[in-house]
Image (spheres, rainbow, N blue to C red):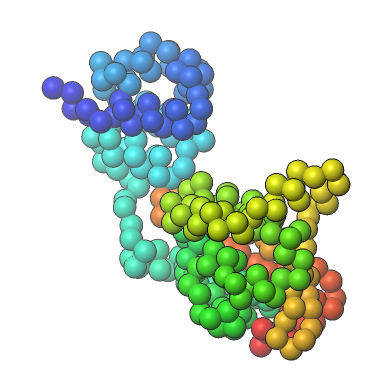
Length: 257
């Protein structure tokens, strides 16, 4: 009996997700196409050496590495962790204390579905001003937010492409985007992004603030580089960035300490 009946289908799924042929993958991990075919069909069982070559030679996510080990029958060194587990919570605490706390403007840690996992004080004030939403797409797609963006037709293209990016990995965000598309919220985006005028390097978001001031901002987002956990690798830090001195002053007055 095959000691690892799920390894072949899992390996094939990973290979296809990477867009590799058997021949290309075999060359990358220093084996033959024939042996790789045997692994995928179950005619050969994986060895620890083969697993090591796969996880070292291929650009895998932590989730993909974990899935290969889990299907191999060998001990899986990538344990399944939960959001409320102590190690994951300690990671989030570190992101909050070492990154968010030092950013003077709204800053967030979000998960795959763009839910707010950690926020700094400025972000909490911003969230409260828009009705206490619990995730980024609800904020961006809310009528309240759209109502204060003075260049919505131009800036919404940036929101649209960013939400598209997140929707590729999140069914929840995909549903929210589909609903926004269905109600015509982004009907103009094709005209803006596909028009005859040159599209700038970036499109600032211009917002009218509660105190009557205006600001121009964009955002930066990134991930922990050295993460090897399938759950934690989905976490992203989002930092709001004012684009000029006046915007920095106004943003600090409204949401700062």
